[in-house]
Structures are given as structure tokens and as C-alpha cells.
Length: 164
Image 1 (spheres, rainbow, N blue to C red):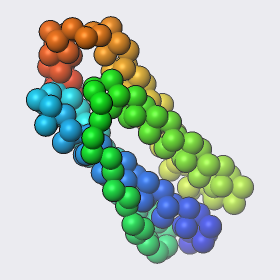
Image 2: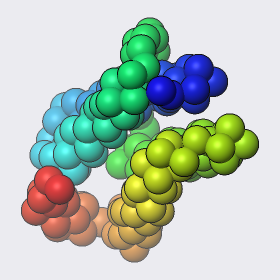
Image 3: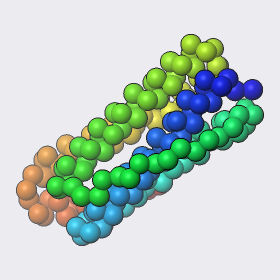
């Protein structure tokens, strides 16, 4: 049986993961509206990954005999300044999620919830990758600068991202 403190904390994290999915879906829509389908594709895949992360947590609670209680998801921002602004927000968001995962792991250690620690180890490793991926796009955007041709080439590169 899952400890109540862990169950409640994971339920909150489920909301954060679904919220992340929603945030990235909104960013994807922004890029569709600015005729950058590669960026939109990259963020659509990101949105789907976050949704799958929420389900991984959801299943963990269910498999351990707990109760999933879904919380409200905040409305995401819909307007952005430019591609670099969006990707900086992606990176900042991933850093926030990393801090949430670390806090959840610390709680699992404190509560001596070993199954949660094992499951959360996957999330810790995933967050390293998430931050790295967002940061790489930021660096590429900085290299491209204001050059439209460079932005179009980067958009095509991001369109090649495969779902994991």
C-alpha cells in the first residue's frame, strides 16, 4: 500500500505533468500560428511525453492500491514574443519540474518508500535529458540570431524529432 503522504504528493505531480503537457500544447499552437511547423512538431512531441509522464505516475499510484485524485490544470499562456522566448520558457519550466521531482524523491526517501524511489529515479534521469534538449535548442537559436534562413533550417531540423 502506498503511504498517504506519497500518494498525495504524486497526485499533485500528476497535475504538474498534465499541466506541462498543456503548456507545451499551447506553445505548439503558437508555433503553428507563426508558420514554424518544425518547432510546433517538437513541442507536440514534448506535450505527448509529459502526458505519458503523468500516466506513469497515475499507474504507480493505482498499482500500489492508492487513489488517484486529479486536480485542476491551470490555463497556459498562449502568446509569446519569439522562438527564443518560447524555448527559454521551456527550459525554465523543465527546471521547475526537476525541482518538483527532486522534492518528491526527497519525500520518498524520508518516508522510506522504496518503490516510489525506484520509480522516481527514472524521472530524475528523464529531467536531465529534458533540460539538455531544451538548452540545445536555445543555443541553436542564439547561433541563428535574426537570420530568417537559419530559423527555417532549424525549424526543419526540429521537424525531424522522433517520438520516444
